[in-house]
Length: 185
Figure 1 (tube, rainbow, N blue to C red):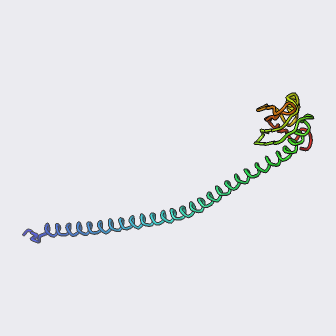
Figure 2 (spheres, rainbow, N blue to C red):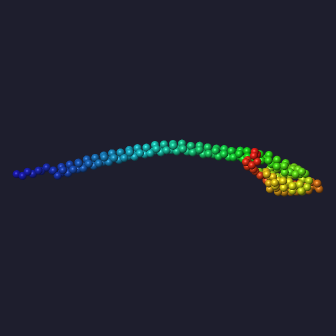
């Protein structure tokens, strides 16, 4: 007689395949979950590392900003000191100017002419005085024109109070000379 297998082999095969498929799905889900967890932890680690780097850079930037502020303060102090030095040098250079001015006032004034007031504003010198005649004032202006330390005389006012005397107001420019001219100033 013929052997007939009456066992439900197809159904058993289907159950075995379903069981294998279920195990494959579970294994795939576990592997996917593990991979996602690994990627998640890797990304968290990278974020943490980047935050540490950002924190370090922030601290270094704060230090550099502080140094930049100190440098700006030092540059400001340097500019102030240079300005002071320039003022001191200009004062040192112009210190002998007043001596030369008075020396020239004395040497240029002719006989019969007297100064009553001298005002200096910058390099402009205004002289008020009394002269015996207008010719004396003209002589004074010529002497100023020939002077090394005064120049550009300009007669502002001349009045005669009586026949023997007149008053005048004269403006002149003080000339600055370099230290190399005329030796010591």
